[in-house]
Image 1 (tube, rainbow over the protein chains, first blue to last red):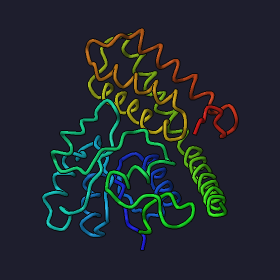
Image 2: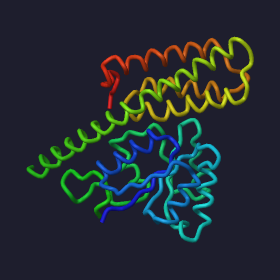
Image 3: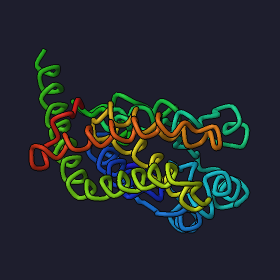
Length: 137
Length: 127
């Protein structure tokens, strides 16, 4: 069964490209949310296998969403990968706050699934011919 | 050997599917990217004629941030780097050099215009 990844980003382009990339290349099931607050609510409801969370969002940013996800009994166990631009990246700080890893924007759509698998220690390479993702372990 | 050939074929198909999906997203988001460029040009003009308010500054910073984050995904690496330079410049606050900003914004305009030149099929894509 395909793993489910929740992508939280206020930028429509990022959401759509990440969704297409993770679904087509990785074989994941992808759900999206357009704000940090909405993302936390979706995570509580859908309990995805992993979350990709944008750091810089208005009102309720990635730091706040990460804290709420890690404090929530229903979501604390879900690995969260932070998505951020190079200029802001502070991997150690984010990992210290509970993030599983950091992805840098802009990402390569062909490589996104592999990067997610690598960060999460999921079985990359796939067992299906040509399956470069890790959803079908 | 045959497994390798099948793998290569499937990988190529996936690559085509992703390219096609990217093309669709870019076609719908290009007007938004051009709108962000307008925001940056207006901000540059307002810097020349005085001190822009905090809201204008934040809108410009957000526009540069979004351009930097999204253009690279579509394969427009040069434009993405240019937007990142603009973002870094704007984040520097009061030390901002207006001439440098204007030069970068003009360069961004040229790069984005080239993405329009082939009716939705960006020439600069190096994905």
